[in-house]
Image (cartoon, rainbow, N blue to C red; front, side, top):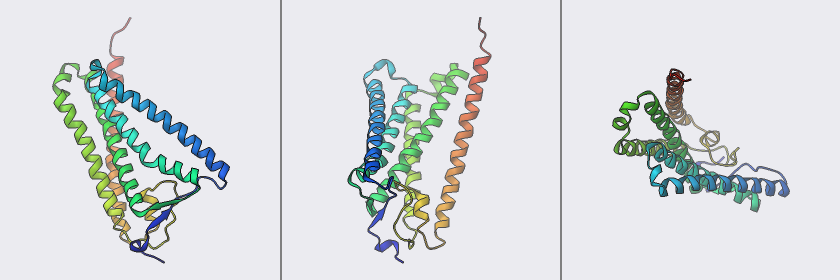
Length: 229
């Protein structure tokens, strides 16, 4: 039995038992990550260099591509390193950084998806108010709010998770660090605080999902009402 203060490293879940399968996983991860990097890099380059693409929709798409790149670079390189060198170790600070950055980028990405849905809703259902509701200043504020909300959410979860004492070993049942696997190593009731935060985040995520569904229902209704030949 050991507490969290004496744990200097953790063991991630191995993706395969043999070296050959681990090399296969490395190649798969490499191909997927290169494809994602290429696609998102092209989006960022096109939006940044094309002046005719400096519109709210492409501005939010650029931010979404940045979050996608960040989430990939947070988890995939470590998994590729472990598969290539047949290791499972991750340091305590590396675990904290991976948890924070993954939550940060994923939270910001979900908020940006909600904002992009609102952008489509206004452009189709309220076209006369589009320039008023989604000017350049408003778009910058909404994007900043999405990034700030993701940062705050990640900070709260990371700080709360790493304040929980651990005494169930240092082996994580996942190939990257995630909060549920870390809470399984807890030995006290203090993990209930993090479960409460997860419940709040889940409710917020559900609210965003409901808003997205409602917005697209309104978009489809508006499109179906358009007279056509």
